[in-house]
Length: 157
Image 1 (cartoon, helix red, strand yellow):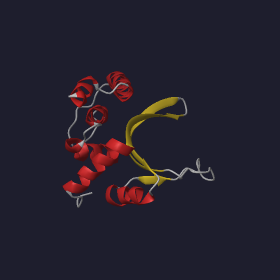
Image 2 (tube, helix red, strand yellow):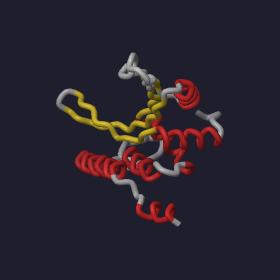
Image 3 (cartoon, helix red, strand yellow):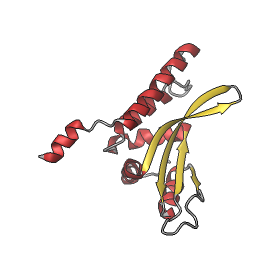
Image 4 (cartoon, one colour):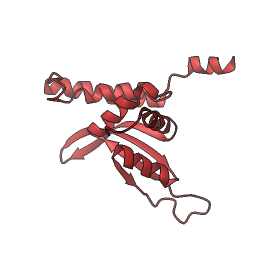
């Protein structure tokens, strides 16, 4: 993603703001449960999804849920996870209008991972688990109750 222009980072931030999702998703491996960071954009125009994949990596999923239903277009999803999602959020952060707070929480979550190249401190296992659970809950809360009170007042002016 070295050749991505600032304009394209701003475009991607707008797509994530309007058509996307920032989440910390649970996944089970046997008895162990773990979480991973995911950035996703949904759209029925697959040109957007291809543009995302070609410029930022990740993958495209094409569910068949709406195929054959009258008046419904199939919706596809472009998804980036883990370290790639982290890089995307870092680069898009200055451009977010809506999902900035979600991105900051998601990036704080990724900081709980040991990264040799960035020199992050390794947290104790117990500390990592509790911090991650706290951030997962914080992200869910921000997604459920976005900070709108001051915005509603500003729109009414």
